[in-house]
Structure formats: C-alpha cells, structure tokens
Length: 288
Image (cartoon, rainbow, N blue to C red; front, side):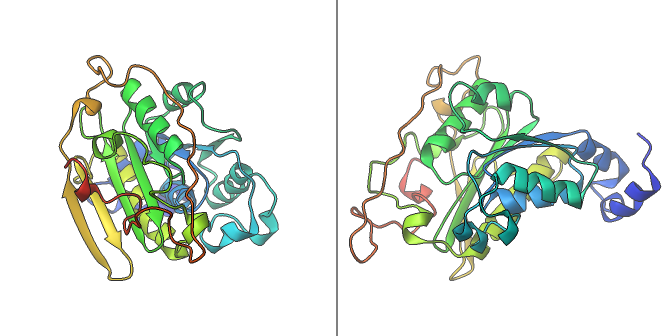
C-alpha cells in the first residue's frame, strides 16, 4: 500500500522502528482485532491498538457507562455516563485515529453469537470481569483455531496469557470456573484503577506482537504481577488436552455457558471462602 503524508507522520515512530517498519505498519492497518469488554482492560487495549493503526477493531459489551467505572475505564468520560460503552469507546477511537474502522456489538457474549464473532477477526483480546465470558471466549477460539489473549485483574494484581493454536489455553490453567465464593469480583473488593492500565497495556502489546510476528509471546506462560510490590513473575504452563486444535480436540466439542456465581462477602468485605491474592486464582497452585 502507499501511505499518505499524514500516515507517514502519524506512524513515523513505528516506521522507524526495527521490527515494525513500513511493512509492519501495513500489517497492522490490514488487521482486525476483536476486544471483548469495553471496561477497565478494554479501555487501554482499544486506545493503544487504535493509536497503533490496527485497521479494524470490534468492540462487544452490553453495558452502559456507570459513574463508578470512570476510576479505571479511561476511554469513557463523565459526559458518557448512561451511554452504551461500545458507542462511547467507538467515539474516542474514531477521534483518535480515523484510519480505524470500528464495529460495535452492544450485546452480551453468548454461545449463540461468539463463534460467528471470533471467526471475523485475526486476534481476540479478552478483558471481561467474569468467568463465564472468559471460558466462552477460550472455547470459541479453540473451536475456531483463533489466537487470543486473556487478562484478569483484582485489587492490586493482574495476570495474562496468550494462546495460539496448540499452545496452552486458559483451560490448561483453570479447567473450570471456581466454586461460588472462592474468588470475589472488583465490584466486591475493589481494584486500583491504574492496575487496569498496566495490564491492558501489556495485553495490547501482546496483540501487536502477534500481528507483527515479532518478539516472544506469553505462550505457554502466565505473567503475574503485584503492583504493591512491583514484582512480576512468569509461570510456565504445559499444554494439556484442552489446548488441542479444533480438528483433534476431544475436550472442547461444543460451547457451554456457565452461570455467573456470586461471591459471598462477610461484613469485613472478605470472601465467604478462602481469600485469594492473585488476579483470579494463582496459576502456580494449579496444573503447571
């Protein structure tokens, strides 16, 4: 393709960058990414992918902007309260970079629509706050042989992994949702707003690395960080039968929707069962 003068100036730091260059920028402009969730993680993911010039972005989220979202969901402004999150986010993306085509889906992700959605995109980034959506995205991407990145945050912690066909998937770490009461949500115990920016930026970086074909992805590895100590660790994860590509996978043969289990809290704000210190459940305590 031939860049316009404006594009040469806009993407100049990419064009100058070894590992990206003009050819890499063309790849980004020709790529399509689906962002599942337009909240705390989806906000920085969408802004950085749009700024980078990813040519097609899909946004799915059924919710409207709430005042309590603005502490971490930086793509939304005070004037957006009560607006659809996907429309609010789409407006900011279009204002940031007119090169980006934004497609919005103001709907809940279900077993009936997820396969059709993921098949339209080159890469899927999951940034929701609930286990049913995380497992649905994982299973749909396995069935469609699609690469994806998954992220989760809670309190001061975050974690993320990237899957490409055949590598360890989310189910290789967590084969099923945790029992009710094990893991509280951000709305129940809180999250430091900047932690969403920290993890969302990592997820956007993983996405760009995949699209460009550069660097070492978080494949067969879970990155875990604690913002209070500023310590980061990476846990190796072995691919299991859950990670097999669609043609040979015997564990994921159909899509299943799990019920969202509420976490019971006592008066002190503690989980009704054992407290966790990881973003969801520490992968080191599972099959790794």
